[in-house]
Figure 1 (tube, rainbow, N blue to C red):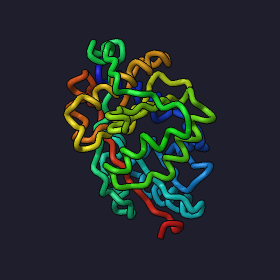
Figure 2: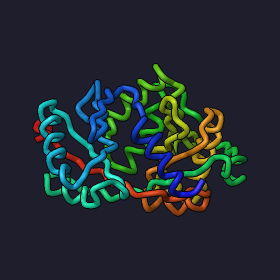
Figure 3: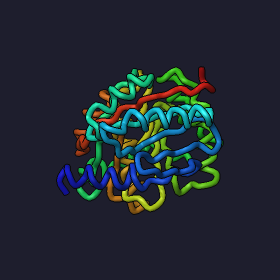
Figure 4: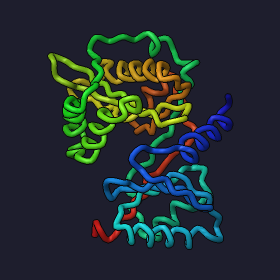
Length: 261
């Protein structure tokens, strides 16, 4: 499968047809919305716009989310139309300060042996809601955020839909030093990888790669052929070393409705 085919599959699977548990999916001719059922953070992950209607649709979506009292994240991809969609969102008041991520994909059938065979004894799987604090302790220390919403969502998923989330942490002296997780949305060929964070004093010791291997092997057991990551500049070289390829770039564009102002 070449890069063009892989990008088309990614769009179809991870943007157009995806159903996120806990979100209400709404489809119009122009956008696909995912509306939070339990909070005020919702998002648009796919749009089909033209230069002639883009500004009007953006205003319409802003009005809708203001009326709901929701924060809107509009995720724009490099190949989305019109080509100036990000500039139009910025002119409409969206916060564009988050740096872009490289959208990377690996075909598990072509994964290197280092990922298929790695069985690090430092890696443990987190299987109960009570253990979520362990893996998010790493995230909180590195990113200086409390991750309250993520904590609730992950605990709920492990309790009610454990087949849709696999969580792992690397431990040193019985303390978590690196953590990551994989999500499995229904009827998908992809496992999406998240987290991938290591405490500064423990970087360069193979924990990130060991967590990557654990999630690859987990994804294969779940019957998923492809792994995808929204990669930061720090993660990208490691992922490329293990065979991941960049298929596009993505920007988080944030609109704060009146509930946040």
